Length: 283
Image (tube, rainbow, N blue to C red; front, top):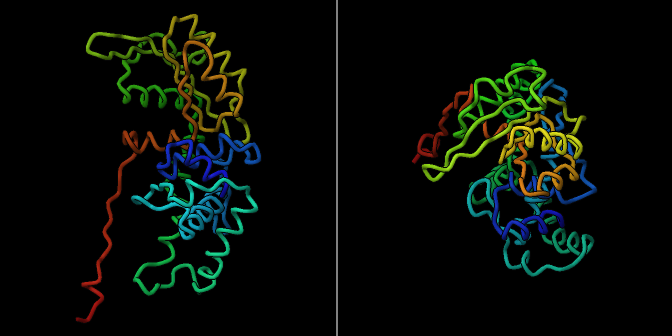
């Protein structure tokens, strides 16, 4: 819970739970660097992200103890107790659990209806969204050539005009997997280099990979670099991407899934509806 409070303070006191999750992992050395993309199989054979369970449970406890509030679905903000807390993990645990443990004991089952008509699932966000792990698995199953093609298509959706000749070969392209041009302010055009690594969650992108990519950017005089992976980046790699005169944008597996959904690249949204109590109330 303490890394969550510290992370939310760094984000200005308000953030989406996805943003909060990323900054917690990036700044806490005790958390494995690959937890945002490290999937497991349930007994039923479904893929899920184990880290979501302790993270969401910690957020729920902080909200219930009034250290944080939910501003909107999927967003949290620091409450006064969270802003003013300056103790250690043990002190925070005591303050939070003194309040929340009796509340948890009063709840017989996770989905029992509470007196206010809400379910406990509103206190704990759904631990996983099946389509996310399904998409991540599908991306990892692509061939290297097809994944590079996919990444170029994604960057094109992000308003980069892809060069048809540079970075389109599987080898011999000077260490880049795509190249393009982005025009801003109606006249200013910058060169963008793309790197794509289809690696599993046990193979993280390290700082030497960032350095090699920056060398390839030098070869093509790129002002911007975009490094995309289905895995994650080590903390040293994140630091390396932010050094020097040209910052490299990093897109890990979790962010990649977000962007695919945002631009609806080879995916289609499914709309569903929930019936209100008009249909279940006799009056």
